[in-house]
Image: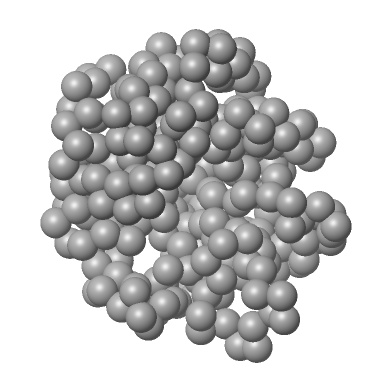
Length: 263
C-alpha cells in the first residue's frame, strides 16, 4: 500500500523536534509521498524548503489561509507569484473563506481569495481550497472564475450533503481527513463518502491537527502525524463498502493525477 497525504502541515513547530522521525514512521506505514500545506507568508517558504529537501517525496502548496487574509498585501501577492515559479509548489492554496472563526475580516478574506484565484487562473495550477460556514460566498466567488481554473480540491471536507453535491456537480475533488473518525462531529460523513466517485476522492491527515478519535491507543501528546493516514483510509474504505487496498490505490492514483506528480 502506497498512500499520498495531500494535506500535511509539516512546517508546524510541533514537528521541529522530530520531523525526520515522523516521516520515517509515515514511510514505514505506507505513506510514501506528501503535499505539504503552505498557508501563510511565514510558512510558504518553509514548506518549499522542506519539499526541496526530499525531492520526489515531498511537494508543497503555497497560499494564504483565510485566517491570515489580513496579511495579503501587494508584496504578499508578489511573493506568492514568485513561489509558484518553483516546480515543487504544485497547487495554489490553502485559500478560501472561513466565516466560522472570522480571524480575518470577511472583506479581507474575500479579497485574498480573489487574488489567489487569479494566481491559479494565471498559472494553471490546481487549487487547494478551504471553506467553512461560507458556502454561498465561496460558490459565488468560484463562479466568477468559471472556465478559467484548473482542477480544485475542497480540502478537509466536513460539510453537509448539499455542499458535497455542489462541489461534485462542478467536478471538484474532495479531501477526507480524520474528521470522519469523530463521533461527535463527523458521523454524517460516514454515509456521504459513498457518494464521492473514486476519481474525485483524496485522503489527508491535516497533521498535526485532527487526530482520529478512533485511533487506539492515541499518542500521548495528542499530535496527529502522517503515519496515521492508513487508519483514516481503513475507516473510509469500510464506510464506502470497499477493500482497503482499493481505496488506497484509487486515492493515490487520483492525487498523483490531480497534483501532476511524477508516476
